[in-house]
Image (tube, rainbow, N blue to C red; front, side):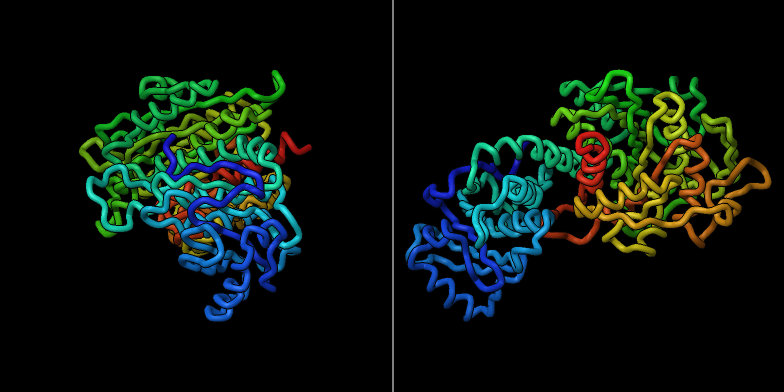
Length: 499
């Protein structure tokens, strides 16, 4: 896996190379090792802070070019605010802020991982290192020519000066695999649809075998034999055959029931016969953000040798409008035996998930299931792009996801389920219809999915607002965010490894 930057760990006493990054609190106070490294330049920092009205606010940065008194091409002071109130996500942000200062030709950077009260902990250093890599990510493999400045930060070598380099390196060995998982998910979402179609997506998921993940790929014949009529109906209008991929990581106790994660993988969504407007249809290459997350998550768990039994399952289709495409008014039979009236062929993701959820519930018998899907525009209207919508039939699982969201910074907000909404998807011709109309669109979609979990503790994450095209942040400048990998890795860690 290629990275825009290389991150290493050195002692606090090591000589600075290239750009020097230091931290101060909201009184401009720095740590003892930082003060020693700055020497007489501390007065320069105070003058520059006064001139720029820099107050050391958390995440604010003071950039001093060619500073006198230190052997550095630039001196960057990042505010940490009130040190006593800092949380893990603040350090992730600090790493992103530092990476944002890398410009064209910046070959080296040294970051003094120290607060006024002393060296940062290994956990805090790991968050900074993760933030550095996440912010530096770029997807530019299809650009043959780059504009001035677009190559900024490429091949940069970053040294984190820390209190205990050995401990920091060991801690980041695990956390770095989670970052790799996010990058894999981002790459998948960013790929063009003529490159990443169901067969190719399945092939890439198969690369997890190198890490010890068991991977099974179901082709159209196998899915037809299983009775996956809901999923196959979505893909029948495409020249690209559909696939379902089942991934299993057995890192926990032998024979212990797994936990499961299911991802919607619509590699391109035209809307089918109920075709979408042309404006922004190109964004529908990202309608597989849930499947991308599951693949990235399985990579992270396997690479860091998570002590957990985990099943990852993704349904991969293209929703295209050819002469064989599914029509409004069609009735399909799902793997569960339940029949579905197709009202709108653009409500396709829930059809894909219906069969995969049922397959996992019946075959894997997991302790709980979480599905992720760029499912509805309604959730973006309701929650914007800062939270994913969460629906669950289990309060304990919902609380765990809420906590993992706060810890990871990939936040979720619980939405309602209830029989009042369920009535909206009842059909006069089949067991149900695939859309309940405009009102409560994200809720009726979740109600639909709930009919296919067979009583398994389950949560549905509608990530339409967070997986693609969300506003850029301190740790993500990419169109595809890789949302969900860090959230669910934290959920697994909390469930298995932090008891």
